[in-house]
Image (cartoon, rainbow, N blue to C red):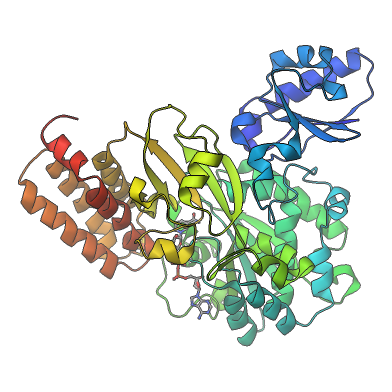
Length: 515
Ligand code: NAI
Ligand code: SF4
């Protein structure tokens, strides 16, 4: 029998280590020889620590388990899969939240021991890399193109076309850079990949290296993820030892080296060109494009810059074939999207779904409504630069084009819910304030515009020259959208304009002093 206690940051912050320690002590006291596995999280955040027990008919889940529950759980027949205990959730795979998902990228998450290569291989790990090693670079790029995979960092640019540009650009050295600077509010999917299934990212990067003939990769990781750093460093060392990284991959004569580099906490370093500046040891200032990083990227060499989730989707595509991936989704949005439910939500967590489900289904069926129990009022999809969506837009299908048609973005899949107590004028102010703090300062519409934006919203809220200031805010938003060099200044107006368009009363109410 094996017992599983997750060891990702969410579970740890909710006391998973203490639960694991207590379990070990209690089992020793009861002379039970049971192995305790520290698995990754299944992504059901509100049930963490989610303890699982392996039984002859599958894994049974209990949660959320506290230290004080351990003894009583063991007494009540935890090891026999007692389903009558109040914390018993039944067979893990049958938990509705999991059973309703289409997990392709997150298929292994929470099931395996993140650092065990044996466990990874036993669950289809490295099959994609083994397949890629048998193929020519152009062939691999064609497979990724055929899958329809688009960049999961937010911009949704076709991954295969980006790789083609790098493959077609001759150079003495090319690079694969993984953007792991997951900075969007409410997002944690990259972290889950890195902490709970690190070999999947390593495998995806090695395949990308083979595809574009790059021999060096870097994972640019946000410093706020210390556990991911620890796990990745160890996984890279073990993958090198097993021949999946380094010189002469699996005896193929092809090389791929990988290192982790830490950022220093700037949101703008998630923008690909400032990320490259930072990787080169400079201040994270946005570069002009062109040249695209695919042509002149890290140290001036052709560079693939992909988000964690884009690279993590690649092993499945190479192992199972493009068609197996492309069969999911709708329109030009193929495959699955990792949605992250956060904010005022009852059941926050990771939900991987084929494109096409509606936002309402996501928030109600999976999210279970608000944590406060008050009516849901607004939802921000796609991070701090994403629009606020009112109820009239909740039936939008989760699809890049459907969102773009409503001036909204899916971004990196962050879904932050707000109940009726939210003040949308305050949220609009926050967007400008965020931009003011995080702007790299290179261009005027963003650097100065965000500061002026905060001031104008303050004047509107204080009811000073209301009409004139509202007109000024609209003008300012247009200038930022049209004149900013990157998405930071160019998208900050989206949440502001959507708050103004869909929740005008909040600006009015505040002006009347009701708020
Ligand atoms: P973009 O549309 O300028 O570029 C998309 C990607 O395609 C870039 O990597 C670009 O270099 C590449 N590209 C474009 N044409 C190409 C070609 N012909 N060949 C090869 N590569 C080509 O978008 P950008 O500015 O990189 O990203 C903006 C997005 O980032 C926003 O939509 C936003 O949702 C997202 N974002 C994500 C965050 C996160 O934490 N994941 C944070 C902030 C924004
Ligand atoms: Fe820098 Fe903002 Fe201009 Fe982007 S829009 S380059 S973050 S100043």
